[in-house]
Length: 128
Image (tube, rainbow, N blue to C red; front, side, top):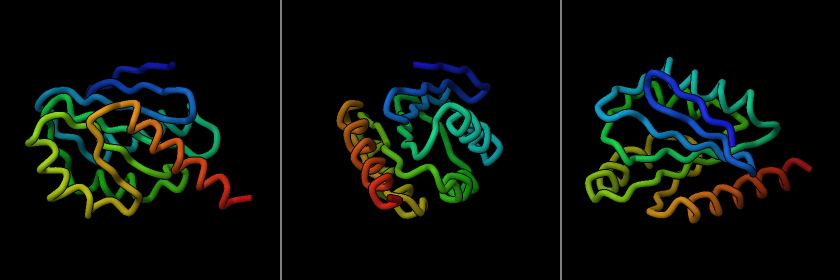
């Protein structure tokens, strides 16, 4: 597993082309941060990949983050990892409709990774 620390938080590249981000408490994630995240993932993975956005800390997202993630063709799906009710409520109300990718909410990391692995496998099968 490869880990990197950024001004907005940390990212981990896991086996199976799955990335995990944990943003710092109280930050405002913007499009430039999203580009930095995607560059780290694109350089670390070959082919398609999935992304787990951990909501273990409270942070805000600018709308251009969703555009940046939506435009990346190798990013197949996004799993949101949330265990706090507020995070789950906000996800349901906002994030699900803003990203033009499959997005799902999970409370367990292993479930999120399994779902992403399935989505990556489907994308790879569709390109053969």
